[in-house]
Image 1 (cartoon, helix red, strand yellow):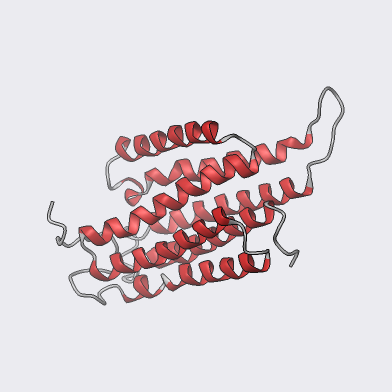
Image 2 (cartoon, rainbow, N blue to C red):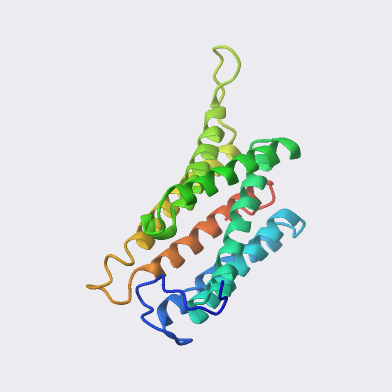
Amino acid sequence: MNWNELVLQCCERIGPGFWAEPINAVSNVAFLIAAGFALALWRRSGGRDLPALLLILVAFSVGIGSFLFHTYAVHWAWLADVVPIGLFIAGYLLLALMRFLGLGLLGAILWLAMFEALSVGFTRAFPPEFLNRAAGYLPAIAGLGLIGGLLMARRYGAGTNRRSVPERDRATGRALFLAAGLFALSLAFRVVDLPICPAFPIGTHFVWHLLNALVLYVLLRAAIAHAGKAPAS
């Protein structure tokens, strides 16, 4: 593989050049803003939640990697883009399984391994043009919805005695549902980027960036809040 070969995946880019995708490139500042707000929340919550801090740093690297790809647009920059995204998805799922659902480390790793196998399977099962190379994100959307649903399902106690959902679980479940919905919406904007290109030359990939930055913040805030350390506001 030629690591310096040009990669054309977005409507806005029609050739080489560092600033050939100005809107896609600049829109990555949204990831830095999301990570910055999450870091401020983390510090206000006590600044001792190491897993959340690591995810915040990965979220920051998502913005840097995506900026590199939308400016250099070559294979090594593509790798710098997708690796942080994959790390965030895997890291957040591991945290969610342990922190939200109470699984042990071994059990969480086994579920994570099955999830990763499913994501790879989705990626390889469809041609690159299907969903604009984004089929591998579908399990992540489903996973967020599933974990959110499991949290909300905790309203049922033993036998016929019904107990209410703990407020922390309810809030986290709502956040995961919101994140799943936003992620699905952002995926739609990524998918239509190329088909809409003749009528809208700048494309819609930048909306994928903006919405995904919001997804990351919602998820990070939920992780910090579930640990019982986030302020109410």
